[in-house]
Length: 288
Ligand code: SAM
Image (cartoon, rainbow, N blue to C red; front, side, top):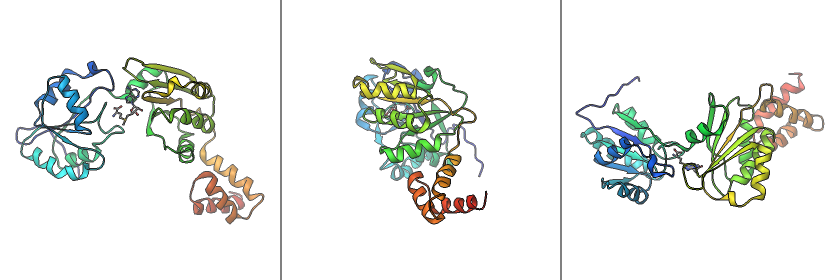
């Protein structure tokens, strides 16, 4: 149902407040003033946020709101908003909801017709894009890639034909493997960029092809510390689509095996449903 909201006198407002991703001076005066003025701050980690707020002399009441208690917190927070209290939502770093908790709360507040206001500011993906030199007109933010290589390669294969710049968050112990898998699945000649420790003392940017960056991270260990954003250039027009690759695999298998066996083997290779591949086998054998 369509709804609209405006900050009103009777109900409170939920402020979604961006906090620094490293450099504390990146907190806006408006973010600090909001965190000082609200009745309660809902924070991903109250200890972390308490330290941050204390550094600015702010002592607002706090409640935890993380992946495991977000749903349970919602009714109480809606109640407080309905009673006219202003609330703030923050995560450990950057903009809440971006690979961070808060989506379920914001959705519930919007659905209840209560006002939500963003206090924009730091966000690692936007900071990275703005400095990478890769096209920003069309991008896809895919959050964190899966931890294990098989699912990670399958996730990359799904993105292979996207005509958008690809943006990922990465952890220090997985950046090396992610670059190696990306070079293998997307092709080593794609342009890429890695931003490490953005806004912090040891901020470093790495530019090059995926193959170059994979090679560089495979040999150095200094790079394996800190926080990372990985950006990969878009697929070029005419690059092979995932669908065509699936067909190539199926055709090769169908030359040796009956359709049911070919579908079974392809399902394992491509990490796709066997039934769907079996149907595709039938289409291919009928000349589709
Ligand atoms: N909500 C945050 C934001 O707005 O960017 C991101 C939270 S997410 C759980 C944390 C990930 O963001 C890190 O693992 C890293 O990939 C990325 N990140 C956060 N701060 C960063 C920084 N200073 N430099 C590079 N990457 C950073």
